[in-house]
Length: 279
Image (cartoon, rainbow, N blue to C red; front, side):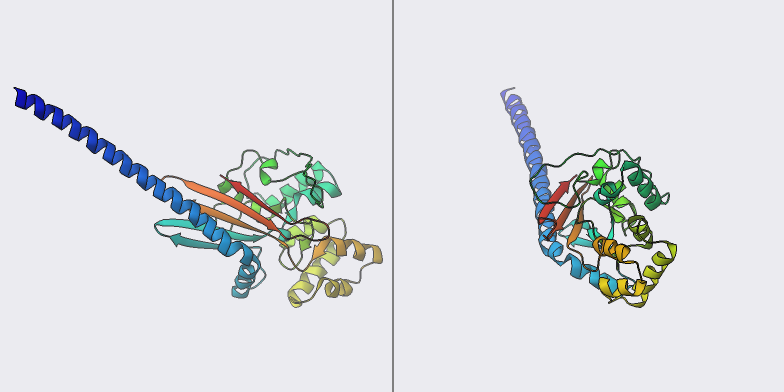
């Protein structure tokens, strides 16, 4: 009888030990994946964000026209990462549109840019930023989460690999100047509709295709604009970008983690800045 009791106790202890060992193995595996995810994201940010402009130029060389964004897939260890590098100055700036007009124009602009592709309801939640930093245009919207109702990263990026969600055409960052070389024609129309008429807009699009290396002043000289319109357009467009973004989606076994990093280089109207959003 005593032998049976001893065997029962030993069996119980072995079962408890095996369960604890299994739990610790699972915890160690989860900790390893967490560490791999964190360092993977950090490594990708360090390697790619400073090279955002060069990456977009490389993507342009592969296609027919300048690209607003470039998507890549990277595997580190056993974890996959989906990456989208973007030019924030090739998108319609939410804060600029509000500064030029009002919320209703912003709603109308979003509707035009949408084209029926986004199902997110527009719920505008502006705030008055009081950071003490130099920002132009004034920041009322610090992220697209203040523009749309409860968006997820997948909603903002879109399902397609080339990022066809709102983040492909709308931004809350940058100095408001639009990179006319990269911006889609629809974005040009939304941002410059109060300056250029239909013929001038068409002419601008034709000239940038025919003269891809031309500067802003060179293009404006060929548009034959009135002096006041030319001055306005000079303030609204640029041929170089100083604000770029990097989306990183870490693809786990049961869920995804997403991080958006926006980097702005300083200029006369804006302090430099780095913003990080995590989901």
